[in-house]
Image (tube, rainbow, N blue to C red; front, side):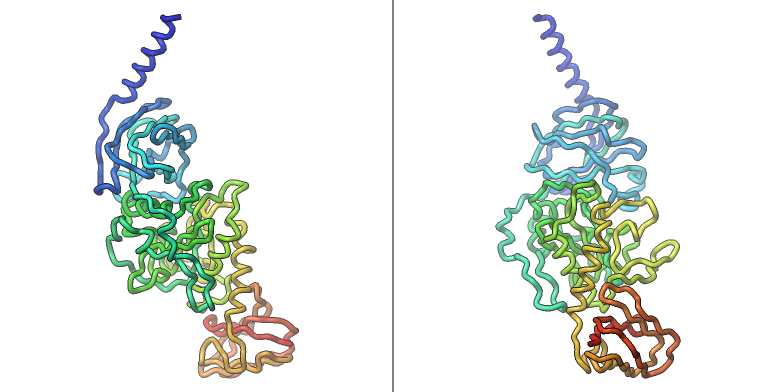
Length: 435
């Protein structure tokens, strides 16, 4: 009996000694916010009580791309266990140095509490691993008491959101002034993180450190982030350009002409759907931006110049649609499959209520569309040549298309009763009613 206990104790001691052997190298650090470590591991081994001499709130693990993360796990502190999963948002293009080009990253793991030690079971992994430790000092939810969302009064006013000056408190500033862009596409993402995390303020803070410290980006990648409770967080700091008009780092290095909106959580697995509250905030944000840019048909698409080869991309699109096939599953299958019905269709209705009606109320003063409402005849008068007119229903479906008009006036007859969008020269759009 005693001999068996002694053998068990000795085996534990030898295991712990083995788990601690080998050097842990500090690769990079930035004060109290970031520390990157590297060390060599063996397969099917539990490395216990690793002490990085750093207080952390989150981390990622990078390993060579040929190894599966499926059997690996972490224990943060004494009892928080996390199974490792691959972060499909991380790619070779985001890594800061050639030495990391062949690495794959785990999804960001955010602890409920800060930790100063962790254990790592390797599973299928062997060789060199990199641990990226991040620390965002927790902010209490009451810190947001003056940043509550309010419904916008009209489509020309952005929904209330939480500014970077609020959620970025105590963290490093962005490193450069951003680059402006003209937005033609709204790109929808999910963070691919936890669905049980409800401390959204600190979640955003940790993603900011992931993007700026681990990835080496100038700022957080998304233009906006939306929490499941509907809170909107301003993402990449636009400074004088506005947060909605700057190039982010969210779509496979094809960010020109895009605005990225990231929904916190993971919506790839069955059973996890974006909340109605979150979708409502996303739709408000999209409606405001599309109205501002006069992209009034959310079902429309246009050429995206950075695609290779150049191709059409939707005015509203999922992340996966802007990248090469198989590049990413973002924004998750459950979210992606609901974009047409829960986002585009609702935004179309909201936009239809944004557009002013009346005989001389045109989206652009170069055109007059009258009478409006009408009986069955609609007249269009323009200061410039009319080349094309497209008539759609409120869901963006094309009903009529007139090409090669080449005139300053045009007459549309025999429209059935209903509400329509008239789009002129692929640029100017107005809502009309036929009674």
